[in-house]
Amino acid sequence: MPAPAAPAHQAAALNIKPPHHVPLVEVTRDGLVESIHYGSLIALTAGGSTAVEAGEPAAPMYPRSSLKPLQAVALLKAGLDIPQNLLALTAASHSGAQMHRDGAVEILKLHGLTEAALGNSKDLPFGVPEREEWLRAGNGPTQLAQNCSGKHASMTAVCVINGWPVEGYLHPGHPLQVLVRDTITELTGEEAAAVSTDGCGTPLFAHSLHGMARAYGRLAAADESTDEGKVAHAMRRFPEMVAGESRDVTALMRAVPGLLAKDGFEGLQLVGLPDGTGVAVKISDGGDRARMPVTVEVLRRLGVDGGSLDTLQSPPVLGGGLPVGELRAAQIFSN
Image (tube, rainbow, N blue to C red; front, side, top):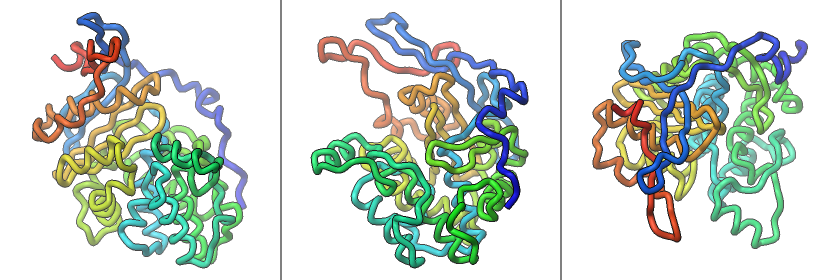
């Protein structure tokens, strides 16, 4: 097996400078801007034209879990053939509900595997109510409860399908991960600027927001007969498997027919529209609360029905239990 890819500090070794981010989201309290989240974003049309842009979307960054739909495309290329709800789970950062854990087990069983085959890290369920229920039952961190278990179950399944070793499937030189990297390169239209390791243990490739927006536009517009289209259709049909009840990504796909959405740790939000438009947002401080306000603003600029997005407004800023402010797209961006 080839030597491992460069370690986590590769970006520093390559002297990649921090991008020039701009204000994207303001937090107000009684009319005063209390906090500002900076970031970058881009919306690309199917033809490659820039419809909306802010900050430095050409700069490399780690897409984190927003890579999962692209990874799922690679798994289909390698022969994965599972029901649509399980394919949606393969592209998920799930909340850890019973249906998510059971789905990961089903993928494993379909290929003669058990939880012992999983190489992802152990964790508690990601969803707040799911985690509280899990803890009340006296449970601790497990690989099945961890939000990437669907992806890892399918990765081990593909190893069985192709006769590849299951042990070591997370190594960057493993045939599975080579295929994943090549597929991501194809979909984004760019080579990885750096390589690291994601929180769950999979190789993590640095790409630009520009490249990620291009990839999501391709997935969202793809014919259902293609691998890209199969992933997108499964995610849109089973949005509760991609995230979970009470999660904003699930709500966004339910609110806008045909829309494809996936979030990622450290403030990432990716969206694909049926016409091939792709949207990529990165919040520079990793603030999760800032993803949706600016994403909603971009979608409205793109002509997505405003009424369908009203339910996705962020919770109000409270004072004494009463609303006194809001999270909103920054004035410098929204004007």
